[in-house]
Length: 165
Picture 1 (cartoon, rainbow, N blue to C red):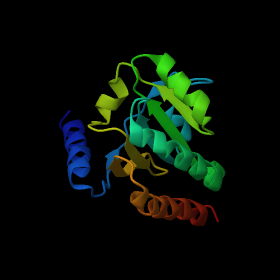
Picture 2 (spheres, one colour):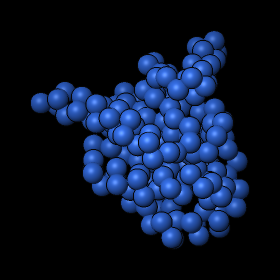
Picture 3 (cartoon, helix red, strand yellow):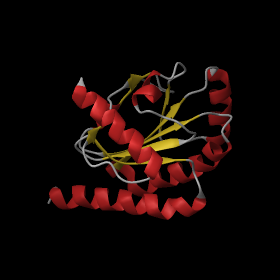
């Protein structure tokens, strides 16, 4: 219990100061998705970018094309998972029909998974390494942040590639 509280506090502090979290285990989840259930633990061994979003969120709309680019660029080395928090799934589906993402989309209408991640703003994203540890968290989406986020992704993906040789 104390360990879980410390991990939650670490993630929360990270979100407040924008630093990196080096040892927090990413809370596992299994949520209904657009095609099938999305389970975080199924991607252990891969770099995962989890993004919490809602259809009414302006910055979320801007992040979707970039996340599609990431998924295309890194292929099987990266798994992008967008977790929708709309209470009305119809709004999310309408948004998805327009954006046509090429990554996994899951639905968390009651916000239970978002609670575990201590989501405080939209969008909130978490970069998870191959061992299931949160290595960075980010709130909001601004064009100027894309380069920094992608450098973190490149670093993790290259670690994976070099460790497989």
